[in-house]
Length: 202
Image 1 (cartoon, rainbow, N blue to C red):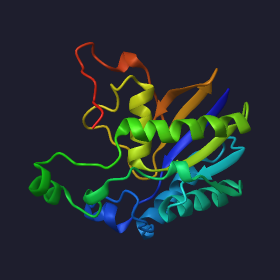
Image 2: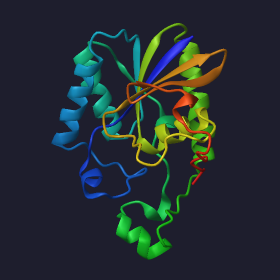
Image 3: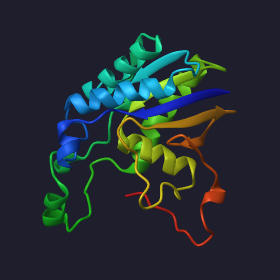
Image 4: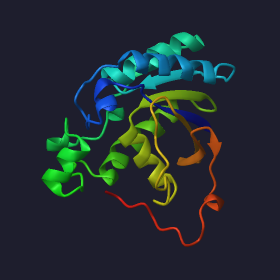
């Protein structure tokens, strides 16, 4: 059994401006660096045996700041942990997307494709660290897709966000990836009323 603590990178200028980033390599801003330091402070006291990250600079720098704060490392960069490919939508704002596609964001990579790309890499990481706790810094699109997959596509519901610097606990048990905590809160299907519908695979 291996615990994987997935952290979304800190803020960038495109985050601040509401622009879709995807694979575009936008660095952290000063707010994002502060968020990374606060994430390290929040996680202080927990056991961490290794740290991995997306190679995009906003994730890699967030991981290094947290690793330095926790006294762990080195940071292993894993290509499979990069953000969703949004294609022509990268750099666009919500208003741009409304004007171009009527509010429905057209991504080059579906959520199912993200899961098919990232999940095997996470399971392989867990195999290399049996019975350990591994910090993984990635992206909102990646973490949100993994959460949807782990909860039969019913979570996160409207209003629940994968915020910059937030951490989400997954556990690998018998080769399966399970969601244990969402943003530090225990997750259970009991959180959802029976009438709530799946969030979808947009």
